[in-house]
Image (cartoon, rainbow, N blue to C red; front, side):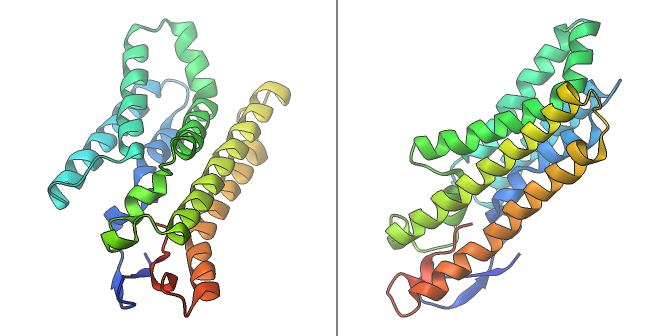
Length: 216
C-alpha cells in the first residue's frame, strides 16, 4: 500500500497488516465462494481465514490488541458455521440465497457500531502507523470517522443492491445488482480510503498535525 507519514514528517511503508482492507478478506472469500451447495465450504474457508488473520497478527505484532474487525470476522463466521451444522435444507437454501446481504449488513453494523462506540474500526489500524502522541489528535480521529463512515455506506449500498436483485428482480445472478453496483461501492470506499488522508494532509500542511493524519 501507499507510504504513510510518521510523527516526524518522514515516510515509512505501510505494512499489509496495517490496512483494514485485509480484515475484510474473509468476507471477500465468503462472498466469492458462497452459492448453491457451497455454503459449508465457503463458511469454513472464511472462518479459517479469520483465524489466520487473528493468529498471524499476534505473531507479526506481539502484544498488539485484537481489532474490532478481526473479532467480527471470527464471531460472524463461527455463528454461520454453527447454524450450518444444524440447519435443515430449507434454511441452507435461504442462507445461500441471502448470504451476501447478510454479510454486507453485518459489516455495515460493524462500521456504524464502531462509530457509535467512538472507536471507528479503521483507527485501530491507523494507530499502528503513527506515534502514540497523535492517537487522539482531532484531525487524526476525524479522518478515521470519515473513512469508517464511508465504508459503512458502501456496505449499505451493497446490501440494498443485493436485496433488490433477490427480492424485487427475483434474479440473484443479476450482473448489475449482484456484481457491478456492489463492487463499485467497495472500490469507491477503497479509493476514498486512499485519497482522503492525503487530501486532509494537503489542507493541513504547515500545521503540527499535518504529517500525522493518515487514516488507515
